[in-house]
Length: 245
Image 1 (spheres, rainbow, N blue to C red):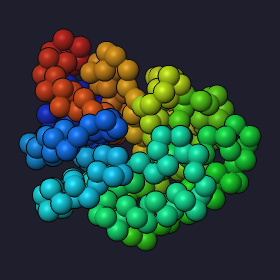
Image 2: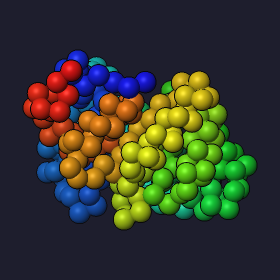
Image 3: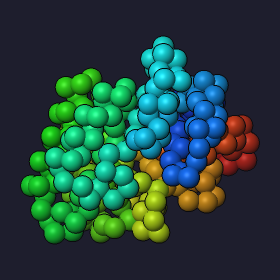
């Protein structure tokens, strides 16, 4: 369902941001600065690479629980090329560390080869593992590598698995970034299914702020981005200049 940007508050927007600090070369100081951003804005979630989760859980684990902020990471990030067993092992490890949400990258080649049964089996196992542990599950389908037909098929499989979110992309690589047509295919598929599964968009390209708000306007319920602070702070100007209604 389209969202009226004009009626949103900064806190509304913050709760639609999965703040993602995923640069592999960043150090403790950047991750700790990210934790301070989370304390200030109370984003929907804070995402870091798997080796950073112990630091972040230690730093803001209590705050996150008290303020309904999820701590997450990507499984088999960024290409989804691990075997199902290794993905499940990685997920179990991150759950033990303290993650409260996980985004698994699906197997791109299975979609290209129409091995939908294998893709569905993997999604089902991942989602069950997450739900058994009380976690929210999200599956990344990597739209940049897929045709429209494959995007629709993947979206349907993820929704049928019981995942709370189907996610466009990882935001890495020249083919990993979503466009509005990709998002529309996913939203239309979910609507046709009358599914409770929601859309998460990551890999938003420049102009990132404007594009993020346009994805939200279309119906994306989450935006995964390192620009979450800038997107939230830009809301008054965006409302004034682009969405006055």
